[in-house]
Image 1 (cartoon, rainbow, N blue to C red):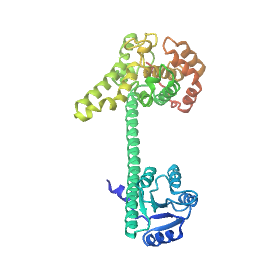
Image 2 (tube, helix red, strand yellow; image 1 turned 180 degrees about the vertical axis):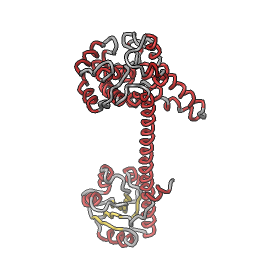
Image 3 (cartoon, rainbow, N blue to C red; image 1 turned 90 degrees about the vertical axis):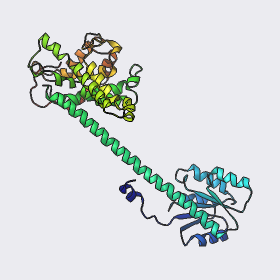
Image 4 (cartoon, one colour; image 1 turned 120 degrees about the vertical axis):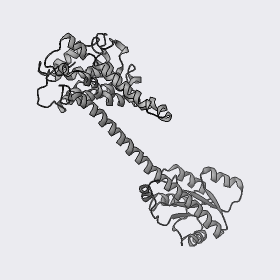
Length: 393
């Protein structure tokens, strides 16, 4: 355990508070005088007052509870204490004149931690009280340490996720730095994908592909959709205006380049991993596999006329289908050297025309339902006031 943890939890504790519950004044006096030198003492002479005392003022660390009391007996008091989250974990020692083992067993089954018999033996009372308080202090210390550990694990997980997010965004920005589609393209398209994914997560055709943590992985991987453009020659990638058919054939290799880069990253990581790390590979590399799906499939079309594999319909991964619409929509509403930005209505018309051709019809329906959200994202993250060149490919 770290020094920071020790300093956080190993602090001097005040004297424990004990609540004594007994309807006999003599017993309250005897126990109070016996325990007062070492502990803070509170007293109650009925079950009703005991319950109020346990819930108000200084919370007791231990309750000594008489079994045989008029009105509400000790068993009923214990049941009510255990049923209340505020008092459920306070240890209770029964004090009783009864000696039958079945009575003792009943109390222990209800949650009492020990019994003290009348008449009181001072040494036994002190020993049993001290034992139960030490156990409670140990449980409390363990709970504080567990809380600290949970907070530390949560902090480190958030830190790792932030590092992962920054790494993904750095790779996406590296690819975009060579492209002429600058500005907030990767920010907008990622948000469009998230809107579509959250709208479709309950849809029967999409729920399995977006269930659990997979939805977040799809959103996080979206910025890597064009990472393969780093492998396209500048003469083609930076060319103003439209490409020739030959140049476009080269441009169409960027999904394969991106997918191959991710495959090699996974293979190299596995090659350098020990057996234990390799066994975790399926879980650890799920995110990269989703990124590969998006990179390889975002230029495929629903009718099979896309590239690089000419996939159609459900052959195209869900993540790539979402990315395809997000990418095209952003291209339509963005300025290019050969065209001004389209209006929302114009872009919507083209998206609708692409239903069952370029796009999954269910994804188009999701877009229509969420069109106002798309417009809000576009307005919130506009491109910088610099004229871009080239075209969306």
